[in-house]
Image (cartoon, rainbow, N blue to C red; front, side, top):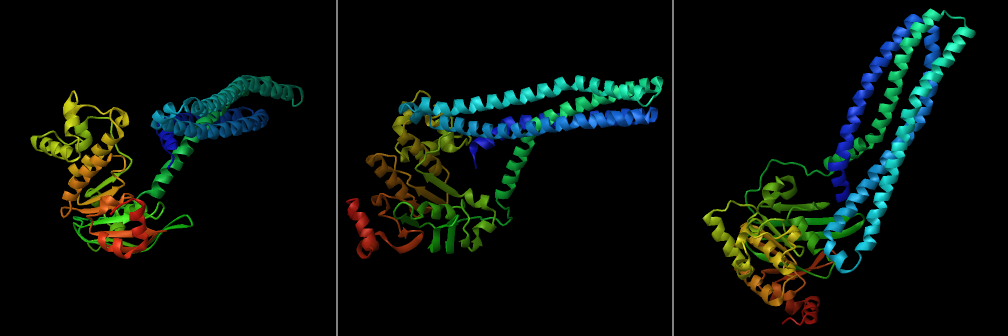
Length: 460
């Protein structure tokens, strides 16, 4: 989903929703007072009341046009706010790149455009609101003056009864004008209601179904006839695979072969369109999927760093007991970060900055890997996890991950084929299909495609 839309709804549109509801209750209040005075005026002089009512109806035609414009500008305001928040988030996320390449002034024009459009819409809404407010008293006076002229000069009504009705209708029309003004403000903010309702509807539509049956352990993983499309494009086709407990597999193939998508299906991120993913005979997507995910470690080439200390990033805010501290230093050593952390001013309590701005890309990646090693997961998925590391560090981490062989189930997605030599089974994918499988040595002997990939990387 659009991050800008979510942020704008959580902040800006929520405030508009509260304002809209406040104005809505004001409308209800003035509507009740309006009806009360209208009924009293009818009882006093029904002819006069009808004529004033006709005048009020005519004025309402004008306000309906004003309200229509307000609604239109309000919806445009929501869209431009969504766009602005999205661009703002991206400028923060990509700050380093934008600054290093000199693109920031150019990207800033997008933000300035959003701001200028928002200012223009706010000005137009304010102008419409001012027109609506300024028309209130003149319209009341014109309507009543016109009705009095007709009533006295044409219909010959009693001035005493007109005077009583005049007082009642002046109060009624005052409430009518205030009602119209409040309704106009309500419409100006009502796009917030529509936007939040649409967001909540999306949340309901895409919400994962809840199932009670828990997955208590990850033993055998079976994929049966799994297929998946993104739109009309087939990403996975008739995948059949069995991953035994505490074994390691590798998914290899060219970019776009479906490796990451297959890993996402296995670890509970992407339901398939057809087929089943069975964990110890239980359908993964018809079970309590959270109970499964708590046993999964997931490392991608995009490191995940929180604005906190090294310890909290690795342990995910675990209590700082002697046992957890010992375990922390153990995994820090496994990912070749021990010397680095010991040079920091506050050791494991040293901050990493927003998105790890205070450390290098390789260090961020190693911290991400350390977090999953600390978790003691039963299924570890590594999607190009060491691609950001130098060869020496990659080799060190590979050796430590190899030590996990037999302790948990491991799925490795790799372009560097040297990192998968020790896996139990290698699956070669092409255009969403498994075209060959076997051990590393078996494929290097029998598969022409795999041998070609090895040759291109000078891997023996």
